[in-house]
Length: 113
Length: 112
Image (tube, rainbow over all chains, first blue to last red; front, side, top):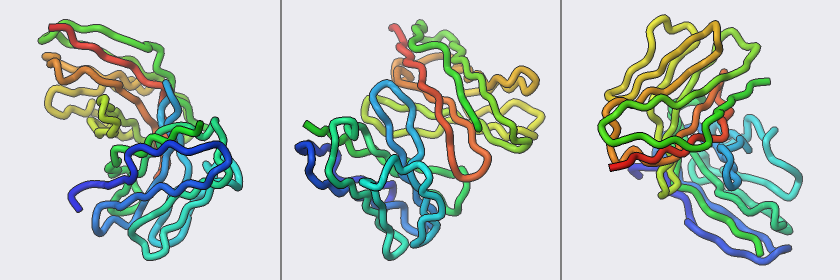
């Protein structure tokens, strides 16, 4: 597609539920990134994919968070047993290689009630 | 570890005037990049300008310029001839490879 697409744009879920957030990167971009932006803060790195593999998942806050990119294109960020503190905007970005040429999506605003 | 500090939570500027958004950084890396992004209310992070640590000249992109002072570890963004559409959050970021570290941002409001 023309840009990075993230769905849904908004998600409200109850505490304890499981959620999946989807990112469709720019066609041909091998690198994909997830960031989390809490209210009033800048984005914080979560995970970086190069192709199908997670090259760096050091930013995932705990084992309730997991991300996949099985075919090297679309990625899904999965959050188990959601907590109110998980409420944030989750941003996805892609780049042609693993470098700085990021294009960000518009994000998914997750609200845990 | 790398760190970005943006000390201006909010700024006002009159339309058509220039404005400077401050950014200081801390890093132990010799090679790094500095970035500015704009985030309008729609939420998307829009890349504005990039400065490499070895670039001797300040980066410019249209109305945006980056005032890079390496010894002071500062990378201020200058927006010339402000427009109403420039009202947004602005984030400074630093990176040494693929990962970006962002500051907490500055909210700019352009007054007509």
